[in-house]
Image (cartoon, rainbow, N blue to C red; front, top):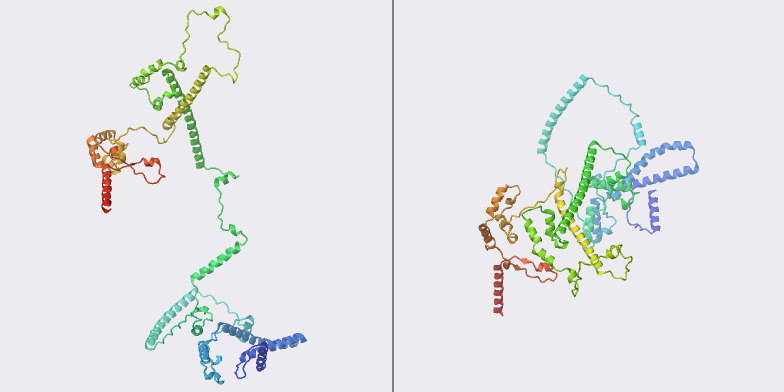
Length: 608
């Protein structure tokens, strides 16, 4: 039968265009595989015929035992086939010996060895003749339920279940524990004796040499085309086609972390598959509590502390509003008082708004009454110049080009009432002027004077409001009652320069200024008597002249003539204010610069 199958396969291959087997070649057939194949074919043919012809159930029962007996063989053969196919896939049959035989055969073909043409010479050995050590151990056959029942029946049936052991008493347990402890002690002692004997035996006996690990040949894929023979030999020696043994692969913690990460990403993507991917990375929106509480219908009861805080806040707001109203009222009263004072002074002195200077307004607001300065002020305001202005002719007298003579007045004029007793001087004529008719000159003067008075009044009001606002801002915190903490207030202080001028302070270094007078001397918390003594001692002229000599090189200090204007730059975008800046340099530096320029000029002349 095997020969028939072999001949049929060869004929089919030749018909399909396969390679013909030479008659001189010797072919070997796997007898076990052929036997299993024939058996399976017979069973398939038998089952097909029984279903077609409809055999009786008795015949089926008679043959069921035979089928069951053969099923085990089929399963074993199937497992053998699986293991064989797995071994063929993994390339376990291609051992090192087989690789060496293949390489030897290739070399013989390339070198045209005469043995190639000899049919009695075999280059390969039979796979079954090799030892089992070169093949991989087959996997254990899985235990099925049918196999379990068959094994149980062969072993003599089901064994009766063991009864539960009777619980021991306390004394029996103690006795058993003692025996177990004694037995373990004896076993440990015997083990130590055996270990000593083994050490002596190992010391006297020769040790086997450990096998060195096989060096793996690295494959250079890039140089495969340059040297194909070397690449092929390395490829066959390293068994690069076979998958690595999974038992030798030990996963690291990083591999587990990567697997967990990929699993988490997949789970997250699956859970969020219905969400918008564009909005998946957006942050959660948050809403202000005040806005949420504004439209909330929930009623929140305040605790005592919160009620107290709200009451204090309402009280402070009421005090703030009261201070604001009092400030506005005080400002109004101050303005009215100052306007009345200015009006009385102007009426009594006969002065105008434009005649008052800013310092005069400040005296009206800030200064108190001083008898010592009264005569000086009166002499300044109402001196000879004041009375000389009254003697000057009026504008009416000097307004025209030609002076008109005045109409004389006579005391003996007739009274009109003697002639017309019902005459009234206050009667006005019943007529109205049109736009085309010009106003008389007197009406124009009156209108001009009214406009000037309104303008002066507005100017006075603006100046008075500014002065009152400045004064009120400084005095408000101290004047208002019920204020626990007062804000910062300005106070007037007398300047203390200790004889230094503004130029000395600006041009001197901070170190020199601290040597002359330190800032500690100007502290406000010092004793006034010590301040007075320091002002007298530190402000002496001899000390000041010595300090100027050490600082500026001159007892009189830097003069305006010693200051040099800054040199203008070539840039045209510089401001005019920067051009007028002052360069702080002494005259000596200027002379030195000129001397250097002169020296460079002479050197240029000599070179020329």
